[in-house]
Image (cartoon, rainbow, N blue to C red; front, side, top):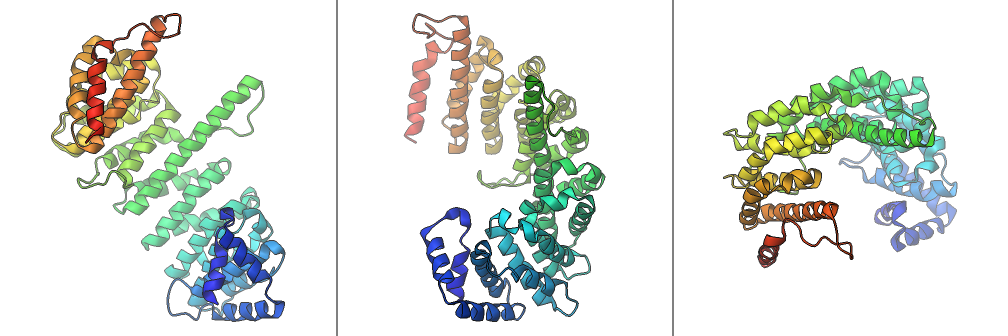
Length: 461
């Protein structure tokens, strides 16, 4: 019976045949049989000697099938009661919180809005520092899954204060899994409820900055992700403000400009860039890569301001004897190109392009790879500089040689060549076109056939 019930918990958005088949099979069972199963599954909560609880999964699966059909409305109250009752043992609390977490994860958020208070009561009780860590972990996971439908609770300042206090306390737990999930909650809260966060930033700033500095990757990633989300929200608010100005209206929400914490973040992010592993898989997500993304977003948020704070790191480490710092400096440079105005950007590229071309021949794979990526970024953002003949003369042979290197390098070189060709074409079009709207020639015409030949060779590797 367990296997049948668990299959009901296929997420609603999947709308698979399996989901609907199991749902109808369950709901078409006689009421007395379903009630018997539910009673027995509920009684099993907290009795299993292993984790995670299968009974919790079964309870959640049945709840996800019945609650949308206005059946078993008392299940949330029952689970809350088991969590908050003083006589409940740790295993019962944990399994009930797991069940709540599964329900919140798998059911449509609007279906649970009326039960949000009861769910949060159970979660807040379970996440308290007085509870054992395994109970706190189950509560933290349930909190993470419940955030979508707790908007009314976040609007209420008193309730919001309690939620934020409990989550912030959980980030200080010495048990890494609890700390990680609590940090994930903060990341999600910032995305969902940015407009309510101002009064909490004095607490959130040290929590997230300290997380960024931690040697535990999973924790550091969440600290970095928090600030990436701050930037994403503020970029979106900036766009909304511009659109509102064009319409002559007032935007509904405005940016609080938390990204102005830039001076405190950049030194941590740039140092983290230099913590990449030599055996790092190109597809692995780690703090070094997350830092690069965060710097990109900070650049978009803060514009010219980022240059003064990050340029010293770039200049200091472009020629560092430690390859990790060379690669970090190039990554940092490529990551800020969407920020400064065109005049500042042109000056930066003019100063750096020679070193970037030279880095294509670096002894370290990671440096060559990032240099090729960075040159592609430069071609996208600073067309006027890269098509100068004095730049093309050393850059084209360097790209040709790099095209024959390791696949990850060659892939970025292909993109760089594509970006360079587009830059040259765009600039040629600005100088004039023929009757068909095409330029008669452009600066890459003389080497076009050779470039195509090299690219075709690369496809055969």
